[in-house]
Image (tube, rainbow, N blue to C red; front, top):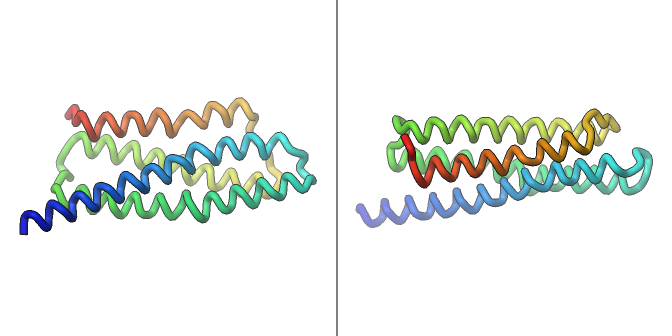
Length: 147
């Protein structure tokens, strides 16, 4: 029985890591798409292509990955009964931050599709750093477990 539980944990962990990678790839790509999208003329065929690309990235990679990451992450935390661990609380706070960032990007993508370009390329480039810094902190919390 213990061997079976150990295998389930390893499969949960592998799936969680795989979908975190997919989610992070999308979180890195979408702001870059926004930068290129804003540089094209609003009434050009290229604008329509960027709207389509952003929509596909959201619907095919970003949102499904986010859902699977949360499901597998909760299953992992439950399987090792980590709910009282300080490192998990900090990790969850950071994952909530990334989830909010994800939501903001989805809403900004819809604004761009409507022709509303409210942010500069420089601001988007700076916002593109949020996932990298956040995921680095999450990895440290999960591996080192400082508290």
